[in-house]
Length: 127
Image: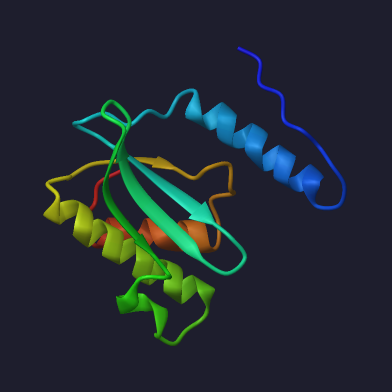
């Protein structure tokens, strides 16, 4: 299967490369009912984490920096990512999810992505 990614100007080369990596990873990483997918979406300002069952197409749990419990808190973006990771793990545990597969969506496993994953692991989510 061939997927093309349109390339424009400016940062479009970076974005196109990230999209290609995300497509490459998504070929192998699939969330099931037993082990759903924890997908992380990162923008310059916010982080969103969702636990998704791909078999049913349902979001089981989610958390972001826009949540009321996180939005007004102090700290840099890495600290907020840690809070999002612990919150999504807490909500996933409440939904009955013990183990997930991690989908970093083509982003490097460093900085905010790694902080979110480490916080989710510390909160008891297994991956």
